[in-house]
Length: 255
Image 1 (cartoon, one colour):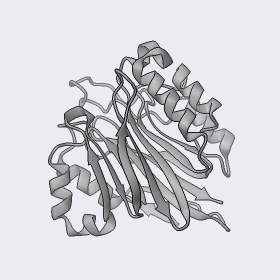
Image 2: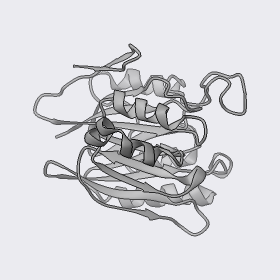
Image 3: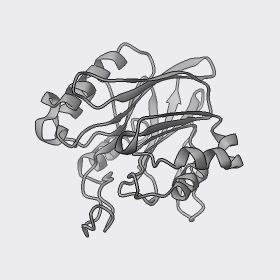
Image 4: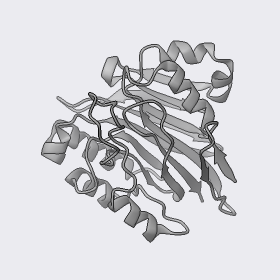
């Protein structure tokens, strides 16, 4: 199987016999950076069953409602928040519940339950404050990620995705790993993908010239899809969608 983008780029996908496949896209759309049209194009061109977006522009919801193809592809949608903190979940599968949650002084996250066939998938969409990069798990949003990891480790199939504003060396990521989550490919060539992840080969931020005009290529990996209870057949940075962050794509297998 091949996942094609209309701009010609492609990601090779692998079907695992005896399992069900779930494809996930995560993206920080950079409020005011990627237009509603850019966002519609990306979600329409990527073959994902669930899409989690942070920093959703205010006109994206109105635009997707007017786009018949996008509406048909993602009939289940949840939006919450304002401005920089606005988040969206788009799903081909029924969203059984979705709600914001937060700890005192932290940014809110969205926690949801999505039903795929006979499996409940617990999905948490996160956008941490930049303070987490300095204070780690002691920052308010660092404590939030630790709390999410605690809740999610009690669930059979869990996904925590979003912009964590922290990298591989942070105490927050260590807590996620300790809770049994992975954010790299675990099937076929796991060590190679782990080495790629740890070497910065999955960097998502910044995009040249789009973050306050800074002329730097992607240097840090702060956007991520963490999974627990899945096999990860594919984990990759997806093509540029017009934001100051690159999207992240994962193909998961459900045993």
